[in-house]
Length: 500
Image (cartoon, rainbow, N blue to C red; front, top):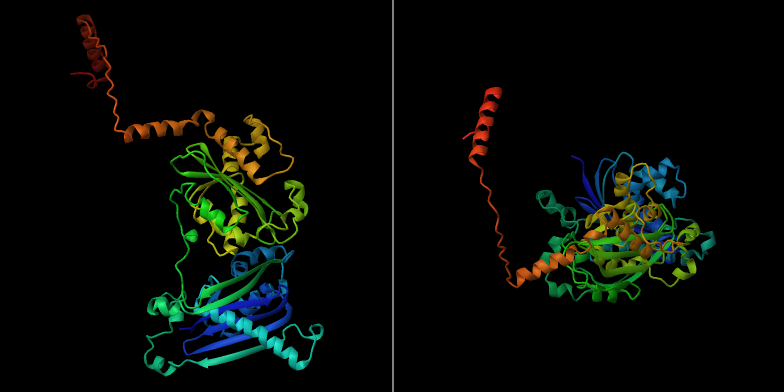
């Protein structure tokens, strides 16, 4: 059987772009290998890619590789996006040289790609992060020793390999059944259960990371307990239960002051529906375009509750030609939060609801991409999605079914749509959705349900006493009925249903 090898890879960058390093922590059945290197002028994405390339290249070609990275950019790029990039001949793709090299390095290999949450206390990921930072330090040392400037240093300045024989190698030879827990327990749950909580809680580390996605830089500084693994936050658990709109608004607004949440004015019971719209810098979520605005309004039992959420987001790049559609300028977005900063509050508000959007595939692709970049699961995994464009095409085949066309068709009151806005479009879409699915006549169904519930709670029961008239047939009518039955049976040669 071929050998199974586990790899943890990571990149680090002091400034993005700036001085960077990469690290690969490789665990075989008999040894651990620690690889690191660095470059003078690079980006976090390039270091993440280099770590994967160097780690894979180090391993035998016939080995089964289980690779863990905290970069969704790397994991999704090599497993999902790369075929599309090849078809369009790498047009508009960042770092094509490294993507081509990674693709070539992976050829003929058996690799299982996995994403792991970075800086969450997992030993394998933490070791890879330490190696990446060590690569930065060694690059600086090499610069000092050589007295060289950045302008004349080669691209790859330094790399080193450290092989550490496993302390249990001789024991493992006798007890092959005992394997390194990292091979069988990549998330460290066994370690978490075996270590006393009070001892682990005393160890704190400060982590700094700069993450670049196609020119967008996210920098975080956080204090984590080094060896603890907390349970996944509720925001990324699959939860399809109803969420009442007033229960978490206070907590959400505390997460970021620029998350604008309007509380519900109607206390309704039932499944939450969120009519949603987004504005973006362009059409291509796979490459460089980002969300700049999200708006959603809440509806329960076909009645708007008054609750809504509205956020402007700094995409970290120019809005470009899309400004002509939404009217949102780069200057306006300068002081707005990055998606990482508002992801928790937005996810908590949206999760578990039915998302209603016009051309929902567009909005959900962008939202799934943004949430995954921020370390959450895809929104489409925790929400039911309804596409009103698909509904309109089915209901009105061969006709224009844009939101403007539907507004005219259903005679929705006109609003100023010189520019598209997420919250404005969500409000218009709510009117269109109600018109397409039954009109305004059903809007008071919640009031009917509410009155019925109140009656039941108060123990009220109404006895309806209705007197019905009974009309009995005459003898002539009974005789005529019997004659008809006889004639029927004679013609059909079978018993009549009404025969006695």
